Image (cartoon, rainbow, N blue to C red):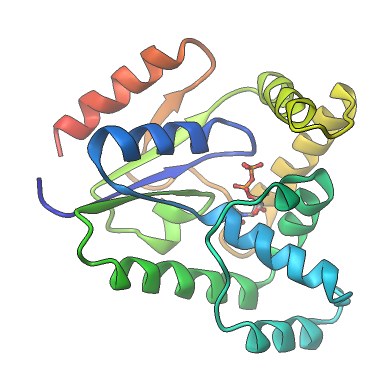
Length: 211
Ligand code: CDP
C-alpha cells in the first residue's frame, strides 16, 4: 500500500481515539492524537500560571517551548485540562504552532507507511489532501456516558450531568470558534459511532480497502 494519511475528526469523546488506534494497529499506520498536543500545551500553561487572556504571554510560552511531547499521560486527561485545552485552541497562534508540530512529525517519520491522525481540524485544515477523511458522529448523551466511565475508571471523581454540560459547552466552543472550527471536512465520510464498535470498524475497513 502506498504511504497514506487518514484523518479522523469529531467532537469530544466520540471514540476518535479508539477508532484511530484500531486503524493504526490493523493497517500498520502511525497514530498521532493531535488532542494530546493541545492538552500538553494547556498543562504547560497551567503549570507556569500563564494568563490565557494575555496573548503576549501565550506567544512567549510558545516561543519557549519549541517542542512538546506526543506522549499520552493521565495528568492531561482531567476535566480541567480538557476545558483549558479547548480555550487555548481558539487562538490562531496556538493552532499554527500545533499544526507545524504535526506536519513536521509526519515529515520526520517518512519511513512510516502512513498515518492516522485524529482531532478537530485534521481533514479540514491540517491535512486537507488526506487519502481518506472520517468524521465521527455520536450524540452528546452517549459521549457523556463514555467520558464519565473513562474518568471514573481512571480514578477521578465525576458527575454525569456535569460531564454532559461540559461536553455540550466544549462542542459549542469547538464548533463556533473563528479559527479552524470543528466542521465536517469536505469529502469526509460521516461515521455514526453510537452502536456496535465492530460494525463501525467494518464500515471503516471497507473505505480503507478502497484507497
Ligand atoms: O479526547 P477529547 O475528544 O475530549 O479531546 P481531545 O481530542 O484530547 O482535544 C481536547 C481539546 O483540544 C478539544 O476540545 C479542542 O478544543 C482542542 N483540539 C483542537 O482544537 N483541535 C484538534 N485538532 C485537537 C484538539
